[in-house]
Length: 315
RNA sequence: AGCCGGGCUUAU
Image (cartoon, rainbow, N blue to C red):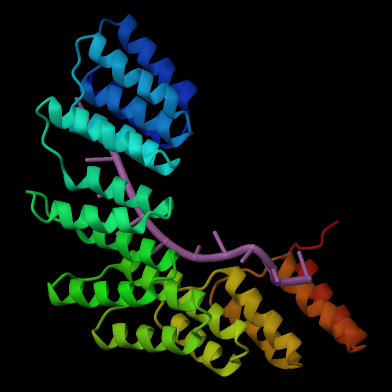
C-alpha cells in the first residue's frame, strides 16, 4: 500500500491523473485497499488540476468506503476550494471536520487566509487571525507570508510592513518567500527607492536574498530608469552566486541598448557567457536590432556569425 | 507514502 501510494502521490503532484488512477485500479485489482493517504493524494491531484467538484466527490466516496477522511484530507479540499475563490465553502468544510472531532492545524487556516485575501476580503482575513490567536494553533512563517502577500496585494503596504516588524520581533527568521513578498509590495508601488532600502535593511540583518528578490528590485530600477543602481545590484547578484536567468540579462542588455550604451550591452553578453549563462535568440535579436539602427552592419554581421557558431539562427 | 506561502501583466 505504501509503495502504491507513493507512486500515486508522485503522479498526482505532477497533475498526471490518468496515470494515478491507473495505479489506483491496479492496486485494488491486487487486493490492496487504498488508505487515507492514498485517497488524500488523489484528492490533492484533482484539486491541482482544477477539478474541485470531483475532489469533493472523492471526499464523500472515501467516507462511504469506510475510510474516514482525516484533517489532511479536509485540508486538501479546503485548499482547493480557497484557490478557486470558494473560501466560504472551505470554511463550512472546516466546521464539518471540527464537528467530527478532528483537530484543526495551521495549514487549514493558512488556506482560508489565502482564500480571503484572494477574494479581497482583508477584514475577514484579519479577524480570522485574531480568532486563531485564542486557539491552540500557532501561525508559522508560511502563515505570515500569506498575510504579507495578501496585504501587499491590496496595497496595504503599511500594514504589511508593520506585520513584518511584528514577525521579526517575535524572533521569526524570514525566509525567501516572505522577504520577496514584502519587497514585491514596494516594487509594485513603483517605489524603487523604498524597495531598495528594505532590500538593504534585510541584508543588514545578515539575510541573503535569492534570485526572485534580486530580480524584482533590479526590474524596479530598470523601470525607473535607474541604470546604475540596477547594474550595481546585478553584479552583486552574480558575485553572490545567484546566477541570473537569461531573461534578466536580456532585460539589462535591452536597457543598455535603449540608453545608447551598445558597447556595454555587448560586454554584458560576453559577461553572461563567462558566467555560464547561454544567450538565446532574443539576446542576439536585441543587440542586432540596435546595431542595425545605428547602421553598424559589420559588427552586426560578426555578431550574427558568432550566434550561428553557437547554433542559434540555424534556420 | 498524503495538505499550505513569493517574482516574471511590453526582454527581441
